Image 1: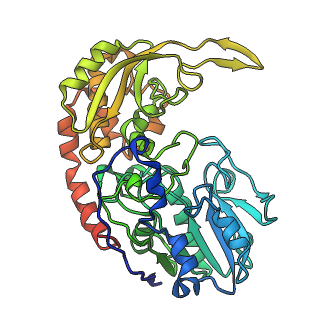
Image 2: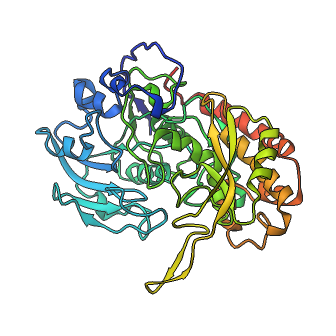
Image 3: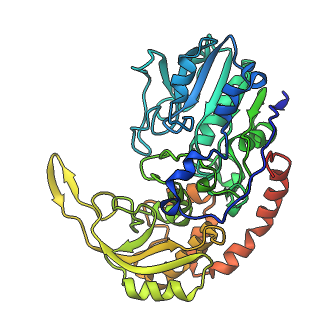
Length: 432
């Protein structure tokens, strides 16, 4: 089936140099710069025709809001020309209250009385009975632009189901908080298998918005394509980080409370899958640390500073996680293990345009393996090795790190795949 791009006039914008959200003048949110696909849909008669007078299904979560933080659910439910008949929740649930990886069940939305169907856990593949009575399916979720973030696969599965049932699928586009100009990291190797954290051969940071990602999936990967419509943003350019857009940022999941955390997720999140390194999840700065009881923080800091990685600074840090790796363990209401003091580094992004998070993370892996080979961080005996491989998109990188191969060689060897991805990606892009 064809892909339809719902056209909208893109407004010009004068961009300031990106600054972290905490340094942004709060008054900037009063000066709209970018309008999301949701806002375009509701303000443009041409776009609203996609849903007018129809029974609508909606895939969303707490990030589906307008700039006044009004939920997409509420906006559609109370609209006189739309009948909202079904809601679909990805990982973390429709209201964002489920922990990562926890199965999410079906429910009824208490505010609207609309049935809620889970797309994660016991049912990660939409089934026919949940789609009965749906004329058009909408998708409105803020993503973070990382291959291992599962929302795009909930979108892909539903696109395929809608294709089988001739239900149009509409993506209400949103910014890539890390920048839609940044592609970094290896391309998943489908010959080694796919999973819920990696289904298609795309770069780890794939540098696309949800709408652009849907276009690629629909035309290149889905067994059954759908009639896809993308309602694009206005005023958006690829080099924007989220704080350039003038839009509020709603946490995309439990440990990504701020837009800049999405970038840190790409900087340490793969290492965190090993569970023998604390990356700050369970502490106050998720994805901003590399620490463990066995690490010498000062020594690690010196090693990482010596790499001169662009856009990054490091300082020694010590802390006790409140949960997660090296946090306290409670069994049957009794604390059976106290939190362990972790030592290591806080990773600080000093230049959000220059940093290459996944590339830097491969270098972190090399240093950790060289400094602490006795910890078997990347060896086959690590019980989390399989999950690490799934998130990494291959077992080759873990094997080579464990063997002591230099990070520069590993990164150079996957560049052919990245160049091929960049060429395929180009024809699906919407924004300049």
